[in-house]
Amino acid sequence: MSGEKETFVPLDPDNVRLYVCGPTVYDRAHIGNARPVVVFDVLARLLRRRFPKVTYVRNITDVDDKINARSRETGESIDAITGRTIGWYHEDMGLLNALPPDVEPRATHHIPAMIDMISTLIARGHAYEAEGHVLFSVSSMPDYGRLSRRSRDDMIAGARVEVAPYKRDPADFVLWKPSDETLPGWESPWGRGRPGWHIECSAMSSQYLGTSFDIHGGGHDLIFPHHENEIAQSVGCHGHGTFARFWLHNGHVVVDGEKMSKSLGNFLTVQDLLADAPGEVIRLALLDTHYRQPLDWTRERVARAGKTLDRFYAALERVGAVEPSFDREAAALGQAAWDRLCDDLNTPGALGELHRMVADLNRSEDPREQAALKGAILSLGGLLGLLDKDPVAWRQGAFAPAAGGVDELDAAAVEALIEERLAARKARNYGRADEIRDDLKARGIELEDGPSGTAWRKIA
RNA sequence: GGCCGGAUGGCAGAGUGGUGAUGCAGCGGACUGCAAAUCCGCGUACGUCGGUUCGAUUCCGGCUCCGGCCUCCA
Image (cartoon, rainbow, N blue to C red; front, side, top):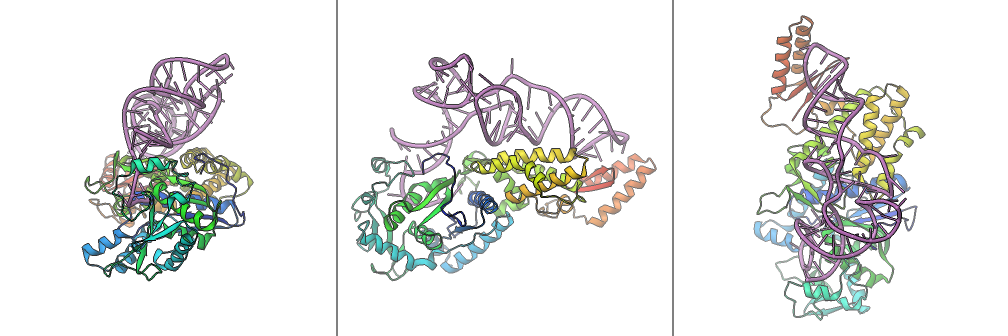
């Protein structure tokens, strides 16, 4: 709220409470939707390791005019659209290694709570009814604009939408609006209608986390008006000093330096990306920039993340037979990375430490040191949601999307060619040996001769 | 116009009042039949102009440029 980094102290150390704004479900999730999910997933993992219990709530907005519009365009029912989109969302986020939140409330399942809240706001003089609408009276909240650092004059000067005539004040916003028979609606003291966009988060956060909780997250663009309005509603209803105490906002994703838009044709869905790279690569690419910074999504970024994971997994494979240790020594090795994450979720800084540990592991010949480094690396991986796969399977492309244009070779065929090449090398027939290697490479398989034999790697 | 961010080596990207981020790319070396992987070595990077300071990329101010938001938006 101060706009500065502050030391985090939870309200209740035995139950840290986190709320993040989730998706409006009318279409496939795009890379911009994925960033907050991955970022706040890391935050939740970090908090879980630090505190005994964390309650993470991420809502689903399933009543919204964009959904209504989609239904009108396609003729498909709203339930069908939202149900299918939620399924896609869960699938996509799972492939990005994001753990599900503890509670994922749907707006349409909480309409009575919203109506209660709106009634309270009216009773307290923070809201009024006008022409079937219920509006929040911004002038009743002196602190309005504090989060977004905006004065009332700024908001009026900046208004570029025609002000509805029933508003007492141009800055007032809708809590409830009337629905005709073609639109989804619920009975209420103000007639059949549907909630405004902001009230669901106020109602659901207080239901699952209490009127005051620790952290509220979401995209940078939600600061105004969405989060400003959530604060106004919740504080208006529950009193001064309530609602979220710490706010985290992630920066936007742009694609090749340009804002994503359908007209530019650079609108990237998570599905599009998963067709080119494993989910873990997408995840690493998202974590390679600090969450508050804007992130420019490029092919190079994805390629770099892929190389990085290959390197990490190769280091783990080298010590595949070593049992990782998670003792004090391992914790000490991982301390620097832990400190980075605890300092405003500095994932790029933590990844730098991870690179350092991986280099140390590659260099290490001491089994005891290897065990500690392996433990520290896996432990940090668990915090970042990375490195949970089998290194050999990773190398052989078990998690790679089927690469178009590359011959499908089964492992047995590759092994047979490796055997043949080995024989050729023994006979000093290097021409034939190199021919096999080049041929495999052309088919997407790269060979690596090591002290313990020849390994093959699937390349993109 | 208002508000909020940002400007770091070829690229990506942290951070710091005084030595090293880290990665990718590049160059040289070790290893290898040759490669690949790995390891070792190699870069006077902090937009600009002032101020504070023994010392500023880091703090303060001006300027330039870039981006976001200003009731659709993750």
